[in-house]
Amino acid sequence: MTDHFTFTVAATDGPARTGEIRMPRGVIRTPAFMPVGTAGTVKAMYPEQVKALGADVVLGNTYHLMLRPGAERVARLGGLHAMMQWPYPILTDSGGFQVMSLAGLRKLDETGVRFQSHLDGSTHLLSPERSIEIQGLLGSDIQMQLDECVRLPAPESAIESAMRLSLRWAERCRIAFGDQPGKAMFGIVQGGDIPALRVESAKALVDLDLKGYAVGGLAVGEPQATMLAMIETVEPHLPTAKPRYLMGVGTPDDIVQAVSRGIDMFDCVMPTRAGRHGMVYTRHGRLNLRNARFAEDNTPLDPESTCPAANLYSKAYLHHLVRAGEILGMMLLTWNNLSYYQDLMAGLRKAIAEGRLQDFIGETREGWQKAER
Ligand SMILES: Nc1nc2c(CCNCC3CCCC3)c3[nH]c(NCCc4ccccc4)nc3cc2c(=O)[nH]1
Image 1 (tube, rainbow, N blue to C red):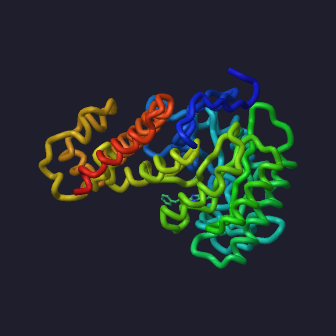
Image 2 (image 1 turned 180 degrees about the vertical axis):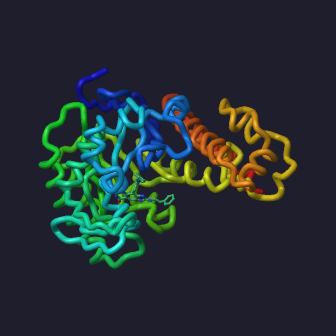
């Protein structure tokens, strides 16, 4: 293992790349899907299971963990890796996005975001400096800058002011982060659905010479076409030698489309959240196992899958568990969904290495048509 942070591109296929990020705690194979472990756990999964599926890195969150159990407490207990028994890389979001979607009473100004906890109403300030401090206390390997993400559609003035504030906060986060070998701080490109603002944001962040660049402010209500257009706008202005992370994305189709446009890292609550609500992702598309049509379907989700949740249990049994609200139902569907997402990423990495990405995408999208019918 290395004592620092390196990103190597092993092969490309058009704008798409496959490679690896090497860090002291492990290697992240890209394109990578990062399961979300909001409150220090990938819900309904054991860490060993998450690793066995092929996940090299999981996400934690400043907002949730600062409120409960508290950043200083996590540090006193030895950090997030020790607590959750995940010795591999952890990426933490900076918390701003969650404050704007979860917290009560919130006031955003140059200093940061003041908000009330959605748990007990206590008031907190999340500044760029405090966000980086919290991520450090958690022991995070890849830390995200604090930013302001605007939901779309939005007035250009709101998008512009959020983009510029995020740039000022990026600078403050870079100073607060300092020089931590083996760890990384990523900037987040903002600019909404306005190409000129996107380019300005990307260029300014690249000038800060950060270890990686996230594309934020997307998957916030805009059509997929808009999201893809913004990726195409930003990509040429990001260094090829550094990882690109598309935040909060997404469905399997979003992911394959974004990989083909040069994105290396993804996170999304979709596979885990959907699993808890009876939705499964398979090579044949998405199925809602609550549907009565599965009540006597004695076939497994996917006999070709290596995951027991997909190749062993019948749809009828999974349907029963979901209808009955059984805990095992959440466990098995989450297991299936994360397994499918990791298999998709492995397929993408292999296809790029073999120079057949478009063929792979074609075959994969054809397979999804079966179930939706
Ligand atoms: N800092 C920051 N974070 C963003 C996030 C959160 C990414 N996951 C964080 C994890 C850490 C813990 C929680 C999540 C986003 N998530 C989405 N879309 C999610 C869309 C979605 C919503 C519900 C279900 C599925 C998809 N867009 C995002 C944009 C930004 C952004 O600009 N800045």
